[in-house]
Amino acid sequence: MWSFRTPGAGPGDFPAMLAAMRTAGGLAGQSGPSRFLFALRWRLGALLRWDAPSAGVGARVASLRDRLPGDLRDAPRGADNESMPLEAVYELDTESARELANKTVHTVMHLGWAPGADGDHELRMAVLVKPNGWFGRLYMAAIAPFRYLVVYPALTRQWERAWRDHGHAETGREEGSSR
Figure (cartoon, rainbow, N blue to C red):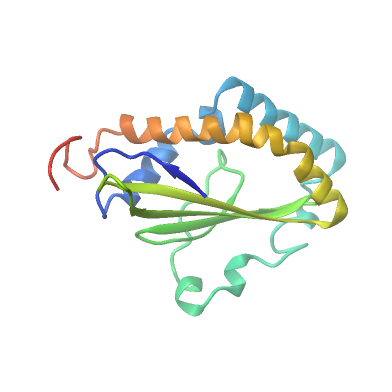
């Protein structure tokens, strides 16, 4: 579970945070080393056919959406875009989920909006990964150092900067003002 600082955020600011994250540019907004790692991964995936449609959501594995309780299954999916490789599962006022499947894993990223220790609300992310067999377990072990030392720190900086840069325009509040 990761927490992202969102100074001045209130209980209704989750949609503003998602908008800020989308504006920040997805993978294109990542640091140089992180972009390099993703480009290398996508290149290897293309060469080795890890990401073939037959290995994805709806083919190799059923979508998480198909297994949700009715209220979540009927919820809006949220926006998909080309800069984000994960597909929308659902998007509510305080949480959303996205997923990706390929020959290595089935991954779900859950984003939630919750009160933080300082009284402001904060973004929380959980990434749940089910490796696809022995190869998926080996793959996840091989990329673990890169995820924890490069990708997740860059993602944290990008999303926290996106919140600071969005200017609270959607909420009508300025940082430091009372709610």
